[in-house]
Length: 328
Image (cartoon, rainbow, N blue to C red; front, side):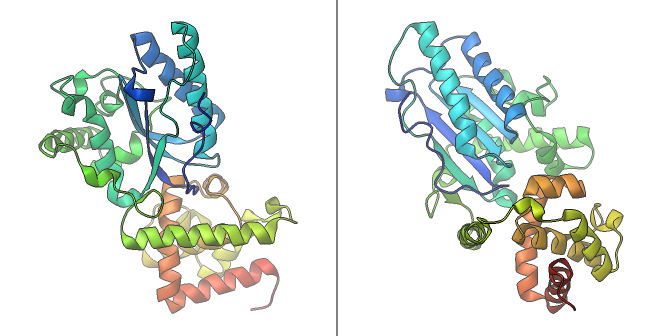
């Protein structure tokens, strides 16, 4: 295996959405048979149970592959090292080859979820059509597009629900709207802008890029402060109680799907204080019942709200004082 192959993206954040691309060395074939494609999918599914992540889309092409992954607790580099190393070893044994199967370091672009999630799923699924391998995306057997249409069950591998919810609350209608959305993408051709990442591999608005860089800086400072203490000392139950007390709202409301302004503010205060205190998205998800992808989006919203709203700032300050034991 090439020493660069397992090296991860330059920027890793929990809850980040990554478009991952890897190619065969010197454009050589990665997949030579149905068995090869299925081996890669089985490796992805196995690692998904061991090192959980969300997989929103995949497309395995003969000499390259695309994955759309949302990071959870484990790093993207660790997941990809296991998957790509396992596949390279399998391939070289099967075909009695030595040397590097893959082209050095894979590419991992951190993408702005709300702006690019649906767009990237469509772009990835249309790869075989743009390559003129099939006429329709659903005719290609080694992408997750068929799972979105309900033509095959990939529930252990692909997380279709968060994407389908972008197209409608009712599943059947969402599938139909998604199908039309993908078909409309046939006119777009190759979209260079989806590969144009700024600041070391970030695809999104200037505001998004700035917020990611800020988060990385904050994470580094928190890590430095927390090296000599156990981060598990942070008490999520106490956080929920503090938000209930100061927001005057019960847990069942702000840990639910309510859209009322005071409910959203309480929910975002919990997420912001929790994250700043060192809680992971996975821990917050277990405590609140909210999905990690929702938590990551609400965290960005909370950071903006606390800078703009005196009411939000006061709520966050009160919750923090309760948690640290300082009087109001």
